[in-house]
Structures are given as structure tokens and as C-alpha cells.
Image (cartoon, rainbow, N blue to C red; front, side):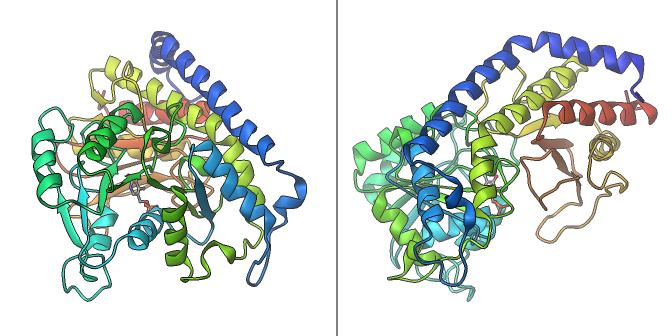
Length: 417
Ligand SMILES: *Cc1c(COP(=O)(O)O)cnc(C)c1O
């Protein structure tokens, strides 16, 4: 089937090697699947909830139950799940603007946040309405050698200038650092709350949902935000984001999303409700499929001598699989190969381009049903040394295997293996 014999054999070997890890993922999916079903049952989700609403969207019971189901699964007091969030960045920004006031300090303790948040944080007087433009102060702690926060420095910062919000990013994003497990996040929360109990701990949960059996809100985090075109949308949510956490904080976020006094009471769902519910039901399984794809890819590329992060044996807490190649040619051949296995847009060949906001040309493979949906198989890479490709997602494990098979075949045909 267009895959050379030797590559097919390597793939079988990688899959056999990684089998115990793949089984572990299946077990986790079993538990998370029931966690979601139980929440649906608890709130008696029913066909009439899926109808949606128009205009103001008053008394949309489906929307209210959706918020309750999300809150329950995340072990949170309240939820705000809306197609009106345009992206993950918008959702995170809404939560931060919702709870921070001029003069307050936002302190990120996991190093530089994800690229798209830099402009949300902004600069004092930048005139864009960014957090700092509004007089919210911003600080950032560099990570210690072990990839965790620098505890001593953190203690000093908390004591000398108590932040209103401490920010934690669970996923590595597009960095070579490790992502934080929920257990590590719990350690951070305890440390912060011991010193400044009133500080709000916020987690950017993008790519993390359902990769473990607990979510950050279940270990003391006050406020969490994420995107519906990543994990929890289950490939079916067409757009949107979610915020879960303490009732008052979610309410403040809702005031920011719509208007003070209106909050979560309005917002027509315009026919998106069914997809958001059904996607959430499917999310544990689909996250499992994507994770299995990542473990398989890591085992395969590690076997071929490439550096991978995380390694196939490592425990995972997000979807992103980084693979380090030795040249730009490898990187480009890999990404173009992934595109060749897509069901959508396989006829186009991705090329590196100067993307606004990036210093180096970037190449991206994304043959997706939902534009930019990264629970779907996608891969991207800035063309610069040390030549790291970041791949994530896959609605089916089989699709990831085909993607990787095409990528390797493409590399082999170009004489790069
Ligand atoms: C994707 C992502 C975001 C931003 O989401 P967009 O939908 O791209 O705006 C923020 N933080 C992390 C860790 C992400 O992975």
C-alpha cells in the first residue's frame, strides 16, 4: 500500500515495543470515558438540550447543562462553555481580563507563556487594550534547571509583591521543555497557597484535557481555560472555548465575555450545542487515539536514532510530540509526508513561509476538518536549528500511523534515511 516493506516492518516493531504504553493509554481512556458519561447522566442530558437558541439565547437549558457537565468533569464549581470564544487565546484572555484589575500583578511561574499570549499581556501604554496597557502589572519567573519553578525565587516574589493571579501553562507549547503533570501542578498550587492563600491560581490547560485522570481544578487550581478545537471539543466542536473553576471567577469571566450584569445568561448557541456535547463525549477516546499515535511515533523515530520529546516510555500530560531532526531537509520531508496522509487537502504540498509574528519561516501540515483544529493530526516546524518538528493530534490512531508511514516514505524517497 505504497509503504515500502522495510518501513512497514519498522512500524510493526515500534508498535510491539510500545504495546504496554499503548495499553496504559486505553485504561486511562476507559476511566475518563466513564467520568464523562457519569456527568451527562447526572444532569440528565437529553435530546431537547441539543436544539440551541437564537437572539439573546435566554433560558437555553442546553447551554446551562453544558456548563454544568463541564464543571462536573473538571471537578469545578462552575463552567462557561461557549462557541463565542474565537480561540484558545481569546478564552485565556477573557479569564485573565475577567479577574484582574488595574494595579494587580499577574505572575507567570512557568517561564514565557505561549506565543499568542504575548500580545494579550502587551506592554504598558501600547495602546492596544492589552493587560499591561490597562495597568495590570506582569511578571515572569524563569524555570530552574530541572524545568520546575525556581522555588526560592518564587517564595521571594510571592512575599515581596503578592500577585493577584499566578499563571501556569501545563503544556510545553512549542518548547523543548517538559510539560507539567497534574501532580506537578498540584505541588505548585500548594506552594503558592501556603504563602499567599488569596492568590488565584490560573492554568492554561490547552492540549492537556483527558491526557490524565485528573484535571488541574481537581487539585486546587482556581481557574482553568482551554480551547474547544483542541482536546475537549473531540473533533466535533466547530469552534469555541471553555473556562471552569470557582463560581465567582467564572462569573467574572462571563462578565468579560458578554457584559457585566449579563454574563452567562445570554449567548445564542446557533446550533452548535449538539456538536459540543457529542465532541465532549468523544474527547476521552479521541485524546487516547492521538496519544497512542504520539507514543507510536516516538518509539519509531527513537528507533531510527532521532531525539524525541517526550520519549515513548515517558508519561504524558499533553498531546505534543517533538521530534528533533538533523537538517531542514528532514524537517520539510517529514511535514510534507504527514500532509500526504490527510483525508482533507492531501493534494497540496506545504511549504515554509514567513508567518506574521515568527522570526523564522514555518512549515505546517494540517489537513483538517476544522480549520486549525489540532486534535486532528497536524505537524509544524520553524525552519531553524535544532530542526524540531512538533506533531500533535490524530482523530484516529490509524491515521497517525499512516501519517508517520507517509512521512518516513517521503524521507526515504529523498534519500534522507
Ligand atoms: C493553542 C494554545 C494556546 C492558544 O490557543 P489558540 O487557539 O491557538 O489561540 C495557548 N496556550 C497553549 C499552551 C496552547 O497550546
